[in-house]
Length: 113
Length: 111
Image 1 (tube, rainbow over the protein chains, first blue to last red):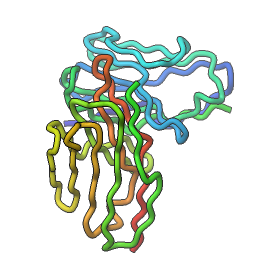
Image 2 (image 1 turned 90 degrees about the horizontal axis):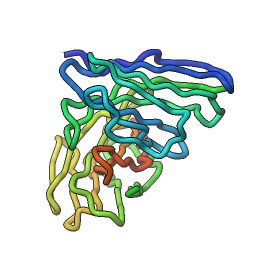
Image 3 (image 1 turned 135 degrees about the vertical axis):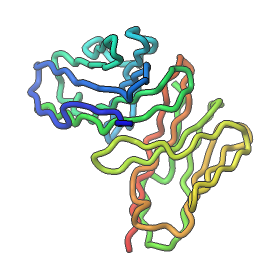
Image 4 (image 1 turned 90 degrees about the vertical axis):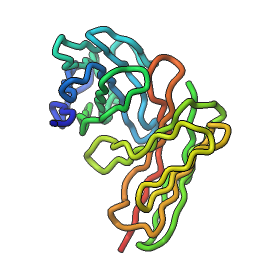
């Protein structure tokens, strides 16, 4: 079974631009969660989608948004990029939400110049 | 947000040594997970502990969940270079299913 895939793996943007990251979960998994990882803050939860609905949201500004499609694939969007948005963005999928094991993708490394 | 503090932050040891890393919180967790993350990759789940006082072994790795379910430890026996990585603990959040992660312990094992 293929693992969680994320595209692109690396991305360089400039301040003020917007970016869209993509995540394809493990086949059959319906829950997708997004995390931001930085050296200073570690891994922080962004949001979780289950069956195309946002179930949970972390403490991030409205510039961070996401969506999930009917095939469970998910995208996250960051608008008006800031230097502090430079991070590794990780996607994790699970069969169900509510305590099921999460499997992480390799992440997208975003650099904002 | 339920905070998880991990210690030490960095650890550099030689092959064959033993080590213990800690994950502490003032909050109670219904479960706690340990992950290992290698450079350029996402975290990989090592173990989930659920019951207070529970001990789980995974080859040379021993995981313990505190009796009060507020803390956990990971002990590695006879560390090998392949154990090098970032070890993360994570607890279930209190708002739906969102993992709260510690900042991790970065382990370097040299031959």
